[in-house]
Picture (cartoon, rainbow, N blue to C red):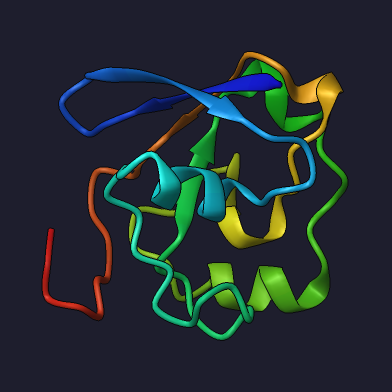
Length: 111
């Protein structure tokens, strides 16, 4: 098992067990982290937008053109923004820190 650290907008940190092979969206939702994923991981929205820690961003495979198109719709986009549904956990990402963006376009009416 590996671990991901999710950082909420207020700075609260949650260390979460992360099974390799699952996406960050799946991991967050199983841990009850407030990450929407309105399209259920089908790369049709930007509601699972995360800001990847600078030290971890370069360890990820580059985003696809489709992911970049969806990121263009994300609120609070940063240089290290990615979609949680597109990042698959593996052992080399153990300890990765990801932050929920300060603002989101939430389709379910939450944050």
